Image (tube, rainbow, N blue to C red; front, side, top):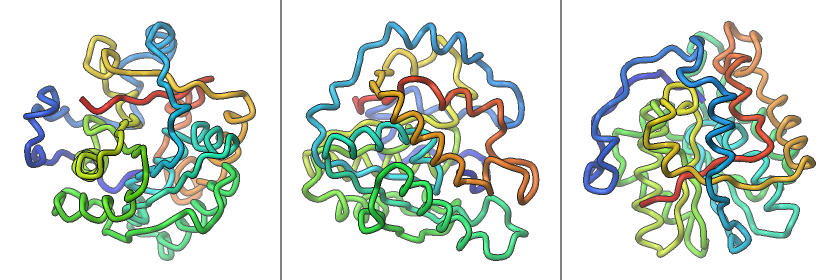
Length: 261
């Protein structure tokens, strides 16, 4: 999830297709209370439209770090698998910068991801790692988009992190995925992670958000998968990167995506 929280300059052409993101978010502390309480989010999201996912038959989920895919879309991945859609997950980094002083963290996080995705029903041969350095995705968004496009060939849908998420890797991944999906003619939806923490209820996220319907069995699979990410969700290696209070945003009876404009 975390590879050094900070800001990064807007990507190439960013302001042309997503003007609100031309202004960076102020620095924020993941351990601080969320700017918008979860009950407020849930009430507002309850009236948002439902995303028509039945047409998603071949899906590539782009995850900047191991755990992003499960936090944002774990129940959706489980639901798609359950109904027979072809789902693949592409990890852009191995998340090795979350605890820089912890030896063997890369290997640990790769192992956690394997256990988590197995809990979601995803076979190991549908997972790929690019191995970019954690925190480096904004260095060459064009090359990143090309790498994503190669893996997304033949997919009808690409899912990646929302560019307004507040993390430079999440931002770069969302922009690069847009470049890739546009070139392939695939549909692109973004999924928020940290945005639930720092966004206001009257911001752009809610205006575009769509709910993804999932069943209780899929939410249960997501909870099991989240349990695999002990390095991020517990104090195993230090203070948890994902604070317990933050998880409430990701344990709803639905998930949320944002259609690319």
